[in-house]
Image (cartoon, rainbow, N blue to C red; front, side, top):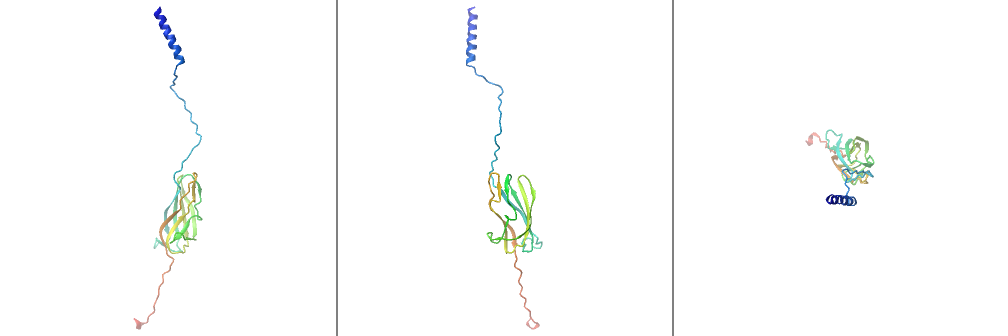
Length: 179
């Protein structure tokens, strides 16, 4: 009986101290998540590129003068644009010296294609009155993202030569004796 009593006391002590110094664990942990804010980190500035540009001069496609219509396409590459001021007022035309902006006659400027990450614009103009290599300029700050990033100033060389100098011929009339 003493042996049974010792076992009973041992069990009683074990369970008593076991409840006081007990570690609880669970098989399942429930974790709830609340979305407080969505943060989009913009790392890249909006970019503009010249896709193509052509002259209506079929005989000499890399040359144009004030009578030819010049047509091209610009692509904006960036999503989350907050401000897009690309227009005939912000697209600048220069011939020769890129710092000398020329007034031209715009015939069209319109959005041709749009996705979430890019926009393609078509433009056409004529009445380029100077002589030299044609360049297109897009000033800084025409495009702005929601993160406040703006585009850099872009200058596009078009590989078109503007030539408004008419050919000059001098004819000398001679008589039959001077031949």
